[in-house]
Amino acid sequence: MKELTNRIKTNGRVLGEGVLKVDEFITHQVDPELMEQTGKRFAEVFKDQGITKVVTIESSGIAPAVYAAQALGVPMIFARKSKSLTMDEELLTASVYSFTKQVSSTISISRKFLSAQDRVLLIDDFLANGQAAKGLIELCQQAGAEVAGIGILIEKSFQDGRKLLEDMAVPVVSLARIASLHEGKVSFLEEDA
Ligand code: 5GP
Image (cartoon, rainbow, N blue to C red; front, side, top):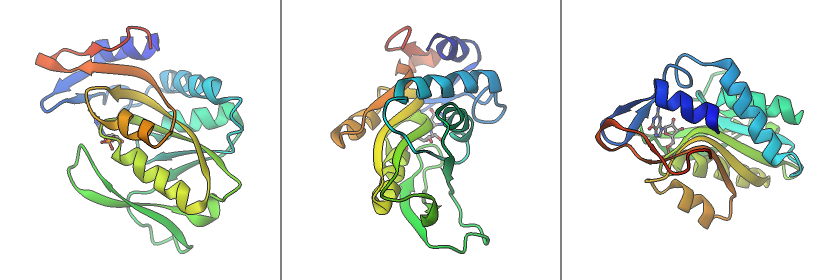
């Protein structure tokens, strides 16, 4: 998606260890117009898939996910990374190893929000090794919900996430695919993905 790749070229910053910082427009300050465009793109791709819920993980997946949900006319649910005192219902839970924080945490969604009748579109900001996505898939599986696909803003194609998800037969749609982050430079796999 041209708008996203252009923005990464302008405002993305490569940190060491294969990490891209996008806090100007996704992970801290948020560009609502760009996020709306990404959400609409995901909705366009998955509009014939009978999606009943959009599911993401807090916090940076929420903006694109809510716009995708709005465009599809369905609710958006975000998995929580820490348990809130107000979450007194039965929970679906999964353990996720965080690529950026390098710790495992338990993610959860109240069971009442997902059921075997749901067809789910997953959304996240980054795909690295696929652990966040795998955790979200596990939550859906516990509810008996079907995962129709996953929409990713930025896929780091030099990591293993896409392969992991494709091995699980989950279609992956990434709006920007990064081939490498060598020497502080972002190289894209396809210029206009
Ligand atoms: P994975 O679970 O696929 O290994 O990593 C995906 C998660 O790690 C995303 O939800 C995102 O929060 C974080 N992440 C992975 N790589 C990057 C990166 O290069 N930059 C930023 N800002 N977050 C990343």
